[in-house]
Length: 152
Image 1 (cartoon, rainbow, N blue to C red):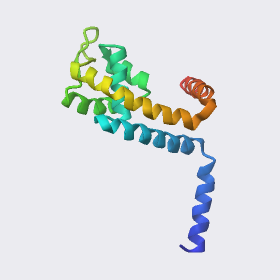
Image 2 (cartoon, one colour; image 1 turned 90 degrees about the horizontal axis):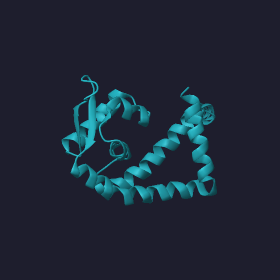
Image 3 (cartoon, rainbow, N blue to C red; image 1 turned 60 degrees about the vertical axis):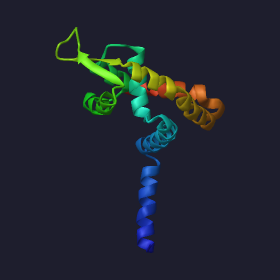
Image 4 (spheres, rainbow, N blue to C red; image 1 turned 45 degrees about the horizontal axis):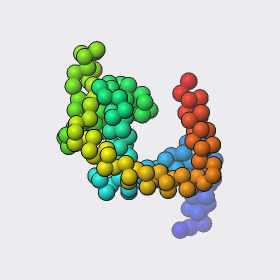
């Protein structure tokens, strides 16, 4: 690598190093990789686990409400639902309150999968908590407050 290329790379690193978005994205990608690695043992990703967990907490939840709860674009959520429907882990039915919408429910296989995934999720959760060390509750609360503030 030439000195000029190294200089350009250093400048780019410096510019992005102070960028909050890049720091959050890098951290989020690494955190997702850890969860995905552990959940792969049961054939799920952290996104799929989050969807199944969200549906299990509120049977019959609409796609819009779940997307809002996951802070995910409804189109992206719909795309992520397809593999779970194909695997028959959840079903999508017409929403009784809004015929244009869809209501989501776990199938028995989905409930079994979610239950099997919990220990793997807990292992990943422990790794993340250890990385945060004693600050874990404070960091989590700060992140929740930040999300709430930025969502206004």
